[in-house]
Image 1 (cartoon, rainbow, N blue to C red):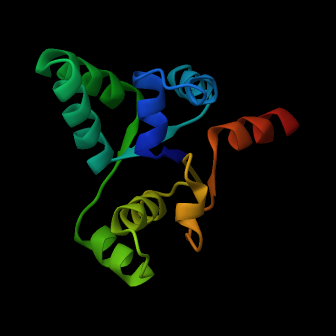
Image 2: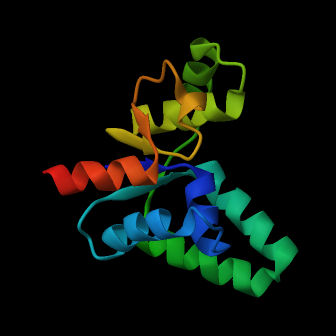
Image 3: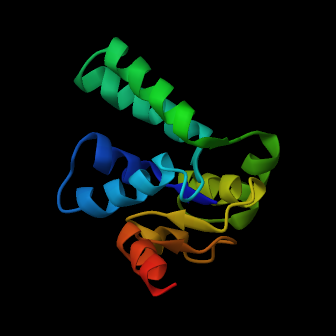
Length: 137
């Protein structure tokens, strides 16, 4: 199972180039049940906030329904927050993502900012790197 960082989801929703193609290709594999994808619980709320602000609440609610249909939600509760604190990273939000990925059994984190996950208990790769790895198998 792979956990998608919020930036990967937003690349697809907002069609952000040059990142859209690779991020969309990964999400396509998730939708077609070729791989299992997860999102942290707080990624869901962030996506809702951004879509509601730039479009409207109805569009945001539809996007969340779609995400919940296709992705597992990696819980963020007390254990994950304590684990994130124990990691001692400068960016607490990234530490929470790593802790959520770890506790939900993910084997990879997909992010455009892999350097933010140095020292992560779960390895982080870009969507492009992930797709290259699939081609090599």
